Amino acid sequence: MKRITYIIAILFACTSCSDAFLDNAPKGKYHEGNYDMGTAQELLVLATLMDGYNVFAQQTWPVTAMQCHTTDNSHPGGPSGDGGVDFSQFPTMSFTPANSMFNTYYSLQFTAITKANEALQMLKDLEEANGETAETRQYKAEAYFIRAAAYFRLTQAFGAVPYVDRVMGKDEAMADQLSATVIRNKYLPELIGVINDLPTRKEAVSSGNIGRATQNAARAIIAKTYLYEKDYNNCLTYTGQIISSEDNDLSTPYAEMFWEENEFGPESVWEINADYKPDQNISIIGENNQWCLMNGIRGFPNLGWGHNAPSENLMNDYESNDPRFGATILEHGEKVDGEEVVASNYKYFNRKAYCRKSERSLYGRADWCYGYWSNLRIIRYADIILMHAEAACETNDLDEAKRKLEMVRARARNGQSVLPEIKTTDKDELREKIRHERRIELALEFERYFDLVRWGIAEDKVANFVVGKHEVFPLPQTEIDKSNGKLQQNPKY
Image 1 (cartoon, rainbow, N blue to C red):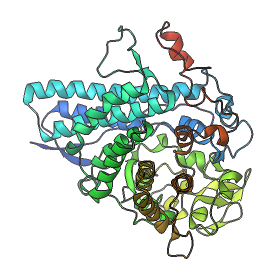
Image 2 (image 1 turned 30 degrees about the horizontal axis):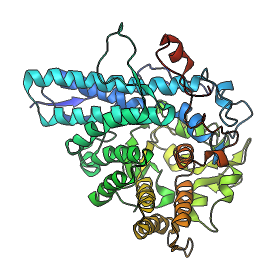
Image 3 (image 1 turned 90 degrees about the vertical axis):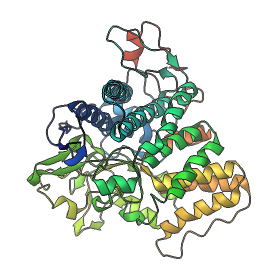
Image 4 (image 1 turned 45 degrees about the vertical axis):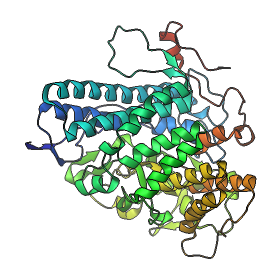
């Protein structure tokens, strides 16, 4: 096949702090790499897939509101009402179906699903004309991954939603609303069947095809799905496959995981690519990834808006001398890279989103230094290890659970005589230790709210949580209205 160079514009314009959604004006270039493709149709398929991946980088606003500010881990660190009325309703659980964050999050998942369905239809036509190739098999696997990841997120957040697995005409009626379990049972066999058509992380890095689905990213979505369904044996199967693949490991120091130089490293299971090098005219996703901007220091250096600030409750839950405290919490008055952090409001910030001075000084970034070059880490290897530990505990393999728990704690010690090994033989006590470890290891990331919900303890941890209501969020009122009664709202909304 003829070798061609693929360059696709998918960078989106940054909006102001008050905007809930992002302008879609193309501004830059996607990663320039060489791909074996024989037809213009294959190029169009790949472009469609890239649009699907890009959707996952556009969700910072609703994810911060729905999965961070609803928890006992964090709160908005800026002035009262910062981010708008819709954003400010989440810490008090006072949101309604009219809240724009739900419409944004819901719509973005269906945008990804649409792109996946379009790619699958194009691939079907292409293979009927020219036959199946290694490239088309990989592209199909990527489309199934994108669709599964989007449906996992939808069912996690909203429960029952419409299920669409094909390109639909504009005048077609809304697809049937199916339960979370039914939807998961549809995408699981599809994704399981294409795992081996995807590259490993190491293969993706060596070929330059970074930021796309890998075998372990697919296994991670499968394992998380089984975990949410409380199918612990199948969860163990797929977390075990990730572990035994040796494609990931815990060799990256905890304090360095979010550094630019460690992107797509051994810790990375699913990561969305971003870059920002103005002096080289390179922007990859860039201003659509606002994670560092939203979490960044509000004050000096002015690196962001100070959202997802660590709560006192979280800070008090760290064990004595846990090195992860300093690697997660950034405090007013600290000196970092020779700069003193001076807060303008709340005095604590998310260090995981801190943009180091050495990174800000590169590639002409200094005039626009809000971390648009920082990749969005969606699933980390430590998350997989702790999922495995949890599933092992629930299936009464306490020794295996403790071994995996110790892997995470050993990395966290960073060579210090802290964080003693967990040796309890009591299942209930070990369960609590694993849950605590997830809170600390993944602090100020994306897992806490839905962990509390699936454990059935959100009522005890989340202020104003209503049992029978807040296990899922409300479906967007705009979707209810245009469904003409076909879409049923979640209970108590």
